[in-house]
Length: 272
Image 1 (cartoon, helix red, strand yellow):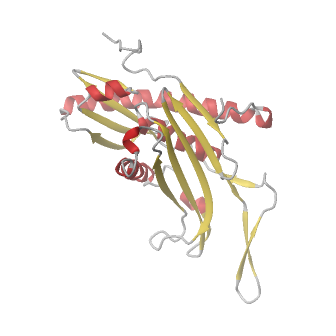
Image 2 (cartoon, rainbow, N blue to C red):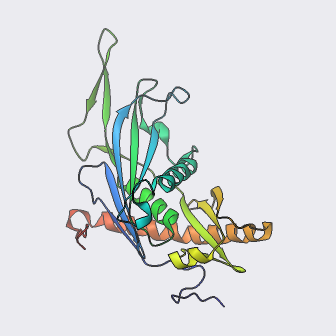
Image 3 (cartoon, helix red, strand yellow):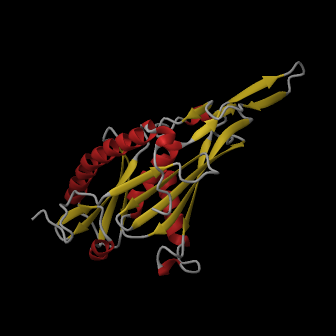
């Protein structure tokens, strides 16, 4: 039967709350609540030097902090391994030319580019971390505003960089192709999306599928000690594509709706 302990079907998400522009001293930020999972993401744009192998592109750096308040397991250095695992997964899903136009982050080739520092903070863990984090990262990148820059060259050939004073004169990132992660947990003969902590405890193997808004799988990873047979993997991929497209559509409509409200929108923040 297509019924879980909390009354959802196998392909149903819990209620997702998304709020952008929640941290004032960042270029972009977002907070996502998925059941009892609570994620905060801040994006800071800073000038840096392009990497030698990609002289005409900017780049993203990820840092994941597992707050000790999220779960007692994170006390001391308990959350370090999970933080590194999540950061490495984010690097993998953004390590392609189609996710974000990195060339638009270049200011002058080989000399200056924008580096986007993406900081992820886990405030509470209630299952399905990867999905919630990928949604929060996409929302924060959508909210990111990078100051417009002009490169001025004098007669001697030395370059000066001039930042625009106008806060509305900024570059926005195109996040249409930024993928979201859909985690599918195998429980018995079935697989479920958006597993709670109890469901994750019952699952021996999960498949992380990174899906774009067009339903294209960009990355895949198996987690857990159990095994998955090829037929199950194929079924889980198809479910991931189907669910991922719906997730993207809902997220995009919420982000555009929130932005259309402008300064009038009521901010919930951390006191809501």
